[in-house]
Image (cartoon, rainbow, N blue to C red; front, side):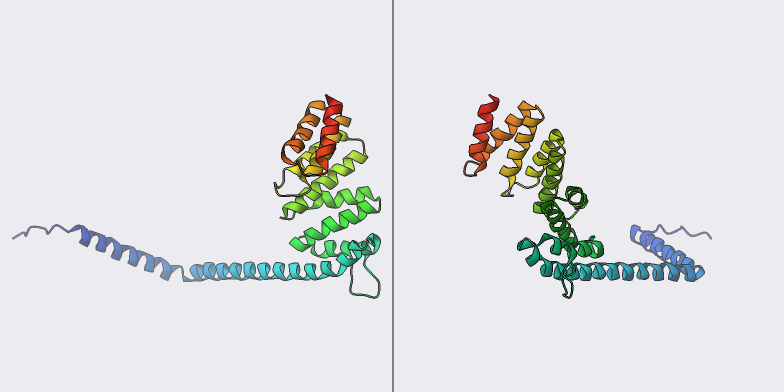
Length: 228
């Protein structure tokens, strides 16, 4: 005699699917052990390489910081050529070598700004521009400095509009940069030289509105009066 087939509950159906999945997964693993272990091994190797790279980059950044700290006193004293090339017979390797060896680290990026400034002070404007343009660090102050350095380069080449655009861009990197009023003033002056009076007005008015206590405030009023 046929008996009535028992209807499975939702719980039993779920458990049955889980058991089926388990055996399918086990079967796949059993048939593909070598591939699975190879994938796991490859993943672990990748994690190890990532950890090694992160640690290496960290150590390189530390070394760059040490080398930079040794050369900064030369830069601060105005010995720009020595700051660039280093001092023979000492452990001061110079900004150029720091950038060459550690330029992709954060401290190496900072060295680019000091190197560019040094070249600028020596009148080597093409070399300065190269390193200002190459800066890609994360510090806003240096980002603005790099833009302003490029702006100065174009101003010296009489490309006043390009210079003004870069000075304006520098002023917008960070609201907290104490040099913003100076960047805005330079932007305005260069816009005037480029015969873009409306843009120049905008720069001077921004100084008058937001930088009342800065030395640039008086100059901005003077230039604005000239335009009007």
